[in-house]
Image 1 (cartoon, helix red, strand yellow):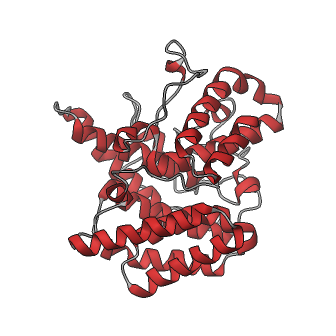
Image 2 (cartoon, rainbow, N blue to C red):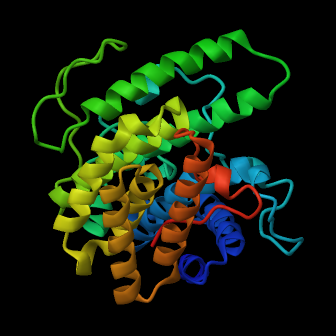
Image 3 (spheres, rainbow, N blue to C red):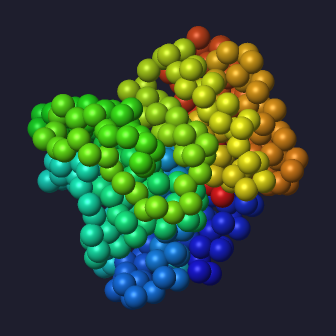
Amino acid sequence: MALLSMTLLEILCAKYNEAEYLLLEAEYLIRTRGLPASRDSTTLRTLHHVYTYLRILTESTCGCILRNICPAKPGSRYTLVTGESRHTLRSFRVADQSTETDLRMDVEKRAPAALDDIHLEVMGDWKGSLFPQLYGLPESLLGLLSQTIRLANEQELLQRDVEIDASMVANLYRRTKVLEHNILSWKMPGEGTQRRNPGLSVDESPARDSGGQLSPSLTTTFHQAVILFYYRRVQNINGLMLQDRVRKVLDGLSAADETHEAASLLFPAFLAACEAIDTPLRQGLSDWLSDMEEKAKIPVFDTVAELARQLWALREEKQDYTLSWFDVTSLGRCPIVAL
């Protein structure tokens, strides 16, 4: 609990390198000490869910696997993570022997596998998930975001590799298609049956998440953000094609309960602000971020707004609407957009 509290404090203070360091320490402690004890402890399970949420959102904007994109790195310091124990940590990449079966949405995850999957490496429905109660979000959406991060990381690293592995390229291509279908066809738990995925032999029954306190407006808005993230980090399409998604996020921000949902809406606001091209959308997102910063007195809202303005200026200068937040943080570092 202390590590996670310190992580949030570092994020609030915009000390992102320190926050990443603490998350790695938390992962080590969870894997070596927390997981065996979490079977019978609701408190530990809750802390593990908080860790998962923070880690996935951290990895989404600038995770450890892509740290060399950002020159600013933490200095040498004492750490629990030694060379001998580093193998126990898992980066956000696609496993070497993975197939598209780990993307199946209709499979029921069971303990202890579900308890151990703290990075949501495998898709599926876990009835014991606490994300609805803690964040108002279904686990399946966070799982799709985790899978998108992994795929994007593999694509980025593949581009830097001087030797091309044909089998890896083919595997990533198949995963790209399956993941795109899963993201676009995703439905709110209980909303209706999911159409059959042409890339997999699966049932047509929907993935059901824990029946906790899901927030429909927040969930719908977060889903649009995952779509934006996929098309920027994986497909890297022209932003002009994403304006309707941006508009839906802005509508969701405007309709949400700002008092209770502002923290969870920060990630959708970040993605939408980065992708906004139309002047009314840019203005609406700027106004929302400014209003939230004024109410919450938390610098990250202003950080997101400033980053978006820099990206807008660069896109207009280059007339290139495929540029992302990475392109305006190449001389600094990417923020952690999580609260």
